[in-house]
Length: 114
Image 1 (tube, helix red, strand yellow):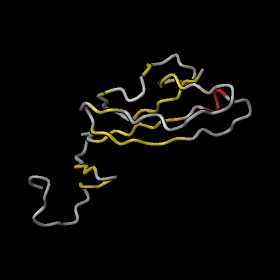
Image 2 (cartoon, one colour; image 1 turned 90 degrees about the vertical axis):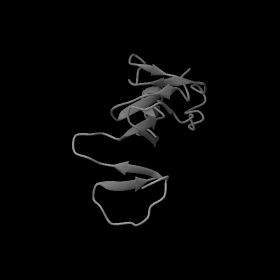
Image 3 (cartoon, rainbow, N blue to C red; image 1 turned 120 degrees about the vertical axis):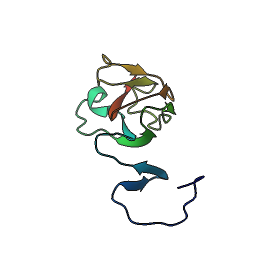
Image 4 (cartoon, one colour; image 1 turned 90 degrees about the horizontal axis):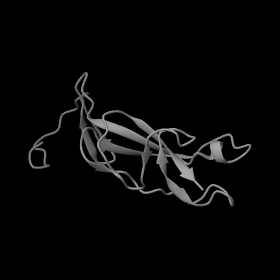
């Protein structure tokens, strides 16, 4: 690939394309990180058995903007989104909506509600 153009294409198991992001894979080197966003319904809603999740793929070890929350509200009582956290109960690392991050490994972020 030169200037975002290819002169020829060969099938190569070390190259994958997901959502327009080209990933060159080399053993032991992470080039892409998956951010899984959870609406965290199990924590906030009595009797909920499933969370809804969406994923974002970002370039590892680079500044990336987190996707905006698209969950709306999870019920009539907990209807104001306040941010993300690495733990369901909010006791982990907090992230703001659309925060710029640099990550080196896959992460799950749980929506926090009030």
